[in-house]
Length: 446
Image 1 (tube, helix red, strand yellow):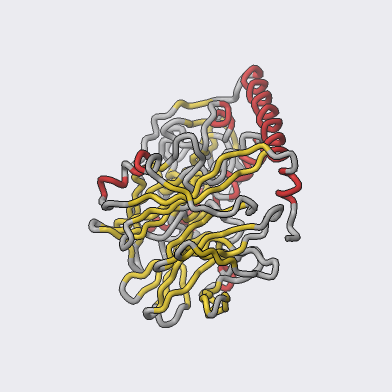
Image 2: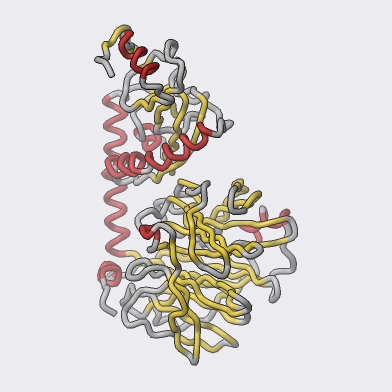
């Protein structure tokens, strides 16, 4: 357009700019960068990013004060600008992960998610939808040298702790079952306390390095298991106390979610490290391919932690594209076609708090509930509960109800319900010192 000039710290425009807006019939301006912008003469919406939850952190610099204050996430909004700092009408809200050992990595993570927030914001602007969020947070400014030094010290300390953890500690995973008398909406809020007592662990030979991701498949349980000194996941089946481990030719299998198509049971595993998403089935003690999942967009083939929920004759697929573990997408397909199209409300969540699926969709008397992993600095340590209030081909809505964490344990990471057997199954871990921990973590050959 035209050159900008600065006056009283406000960015203004000359008359050529306003003439250009009118002549070119511009509907929207998107502002990038710093500095205050005088929007009083601009008659069309001007939208802008703010990397910070405006209910707590307005101003700048992005990510600094959140890390200094030991927050777990960075909030992020796209707003319609007015002449108040970070107090415009909010079009979208998302969150990104804080890496306690790196300011650069934290900042990069926040900025890398901005394009998804922008897409959601433009869609909401077209539909004149605004989020009802508080914008009364502290207006932060450039930090003092003392605060910078304090944050740098924290970062170096966290780097040291992280190095020790990776060198000498392993997560010792277990799968636990809890009898279930009944499940109703009121008891969902009591799950954390409920899961902390009267549970029993599945007995698996201690030689196995890892067991996790338990799913009910009719009368059996499928889960991921790894051999000693290995990081390559295999699928295992436990039925009537008999354990069967399926060979996988050194290809990683995990998260064996269940799927029922026309009265036949299938497995939908996570295999994104080596294959497009596909459905498999058990036959004569072996796992065989049934069918690949097709997507309208071919870029959407490698899916992390997939879950399919059926409603009527429609399948809804929840999952993350490879490399987007904190961005939960939603696709749908007719049951007979298995050709998935991305939902208009997708991504449905951008946050480390709940964007990665943590189990099958739970259907009880008052509706549907979704469980999402807490993907923070300690992976696998807890779940978030969401109630799905609307799900069809045109609309998806959910609301976060709370979080599940265990006492004196890290978890749960995955949770599933068997309403017929009246059981809950979940996994968790404790960290154990192991002098050879780094060798086990790096081993990709067994």
